[in-house]
Image 1: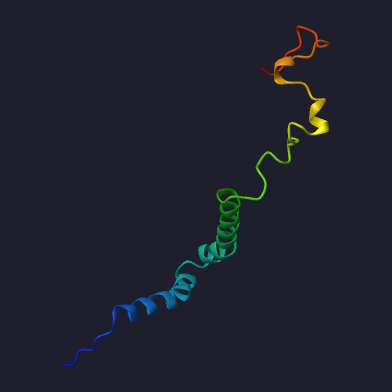
Image 2 (image 1 turned 135 degrees about the horizontal axis):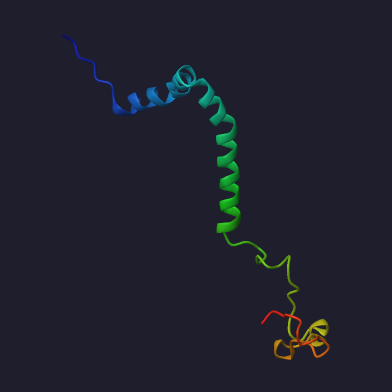
Length: 97
């Protein structure tokens, strides 16, 4: 009796190369569903993780607040936080503290 030795890497390569065909034969609906929506979800998820977990050029609040230096002419006209609420607001109006 002759025994042939097939390396582990060759068996692994054969398994992974025939996996899509075997999955399509055994689970056709699930395979097609995953091939469309699953792959798209992985791509979008990877993009979002890269976007939010890496250092970006601008801070997250950049689109919501004006970020200026304290000596900027625009900022010189702004009230300090201690001056809020403004005197013209009524006392019964709720303000953020």
